[in-house]
Every structure is written in C-alpha cells, then in structure tokens.
Image 1 (cartoon, rainbow, N blue to C red):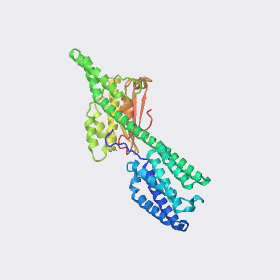
Image 2: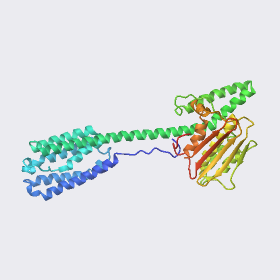
Image 3: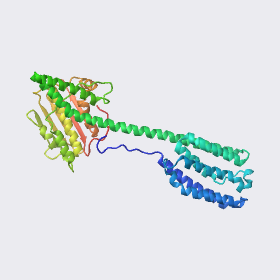
Image 4: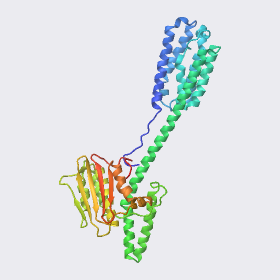
Length: 410
C-alpha cells in the first residue's frame, strides 16, 4: 500500500448497538411507568415491583454489554432473555386478571430488546431462536391464544428475523467493500511500482542490451542476459495489470537524475517550481521553453509530472531515432499547468499504442497516462505518421500527488 495510505474500515453494526442500548433504557422506563400508573390493578404489587426493580438494575448495569458484538456474549444473551421470559411468566402471579383480559406483561416491550440483541449479534437464525421462546412464554402466560396475543407474537417473530437478515446482508456488504478497497489500494501500489521500475531498472537493462549487442563479443552475451532479465522483470511487473497479456519490452530514458530531484522535491516543506525539475532534460536535441515566473506545484505532483515528461522523452529517444529533436513547452494557466512534449520523428502508426498495451508494453499507459490520471489530470497524445508526435500533459492546480483511479484512460 502506498505511503500514507490506509484502508478505512467502516462499521454498519455500531449504530445498531447504540440504538439497541437506547431502546432497552427507554422500554425499561416505560415498563416502570406502566406499573406506577396502573399499580391498582395488581393483586400482588410486590411481585411486579420486585421484578421491575431487578429489570431496572439489570438494564442499567448491562449497558456496556450491548455496546458492541465482542462484549455481548452468548452467556449474557442467555441471561438477558431468561430475565425477559421470567417477567412474562410472572405476570399472572402479579395480576390475576391478566389471563382473562388482554394486557401488557410485566416487562412489556422490553423483552423485544433481548430478541433484537440476538438478531444483531448472530443474524436471523439467532433472532428466530430467541423470538420462539418469547412466543412460547406469551402463549403460556395467556393460557389460551387470543387474537391480540398471536398478533403480537407474530409481529416480534417476523420483525426480529427481518432485522437479523438485514444485519447479515450489511455485514456481507461491509466485508465486500473492505475487500474491494484493499484490492484497489494494492492495484494502485502495483501500478506505482510498475511505473518506477519502468523508469529505472527496465530502462537500464534495455540500454545494456542495446549497447552490448552493438559492441559484440562478450558484451553481446551480457546484452542478451540483460534482455532476458528485462523480459522476466516486465512479466512480473505487468502480471495482474494487463489481463491475458504477456509482456515483452519497453525501455530507455534520458539521464536518470529525476529520482534524485524527485526525492528533493518530495522532501521539501513547501510547493516546488516545476521548471527546476524539467530544466535538466534540456540538451543539444531537447529545447526547453518555460515561463518567466515560477511554475509552482505541490512537490509530489511536480515529481510525477516530471517523471511523465521523462517517459515521453524516453519514447522519443527510442522510437524517433538518435537524430530526432524534441521540444518541451511549459504553460501556467493559473488553474492548471500544461506541459507539451513534441518531437520531429516519424510519428506513431495508427493502432500501435493499443497493440503495444495489449502486448504488455505499458510505457504510455502507466508512465504517462497512469501518472496524470492519478493526479486528476489528463494526457493527450497526437501523432501523425511522418510529422512527429505531440504529448500534452495537463495537471490541475493544487493536485497533491497520486490519489487513486480517476478518469478513464484515453
């Protein structure tokens, strides 16, 4: 994973646990108020008062238990449900008329909180298990099933199972999202490493291969070995980036002191003048045109843009010939910075870029377009056979560096 980047895991359960804790407190207060307001109907009020006192103490004391899945253990759930079932079964002893007149039980709707705790903890199967016991206790307490009793039992049973199912779906979605974020971060890091390797190791190996072949003798054998290692390394780098493609080669670059300049820029505490990173590319065959004022970018953005320019010049040196000339033009438009790299080479045949990318030659796809995409910018490449190639790199002002998968590659 890239430096400073992390995958943030979100929890869909925590709001449910907080809501459950609030529900238990409110329903406990509701059960106590019902007793206080209607205590005259109880033949044995001391039974109701004793149970409600235990219920209140248990509810308040166990609030930390329903704060999360780890603290809400199976043993706690069993005891919690047992207290609710005990309150239901004690109702006829406190209120003798409870069996002949439909009314609320001692715990009232508090017992639904126990069932919901099962649902949040273990899903719909646990919810069905707990609500079945609650249904049985209500039927026993009533003595004979009435329409209201059956209605309440079915309501608790269906609602708890539905909530349990929703919790399971939410957990599965959370795991899928976390995995997708991890894959995206890993892919972005792989692309970054592929760009860095393309701009350094692969280019050196390709240069050794070309020079060794040109010198002949023992140097030719060294060049052949370097070429084999380049192909093997390119295959390793490209694996997973280009589906069903096997990579050959794409090396070469201008003098590679860009890495040192990039490190200096990234280590800086303030914005960086892009001109200082691009000026070393100027030479006998490369003309550098710059504004009179500093072109200020964030260090990481300037580093990536300079590396993309280096990759474009590398393509000129390898494909346009040793006598080809190149021009670098830097334009500062306030809201964005535009760098144009143009050459007078033979141009790129139509369809060649798509063919190269399909073969695993990812110089343009990763080192140029990939970098600009991560900066939130764009890379336009225009080439006319016989009239050279022009690469236009646009970076929005304020871009701080690679940030992820942005717009689709052109």
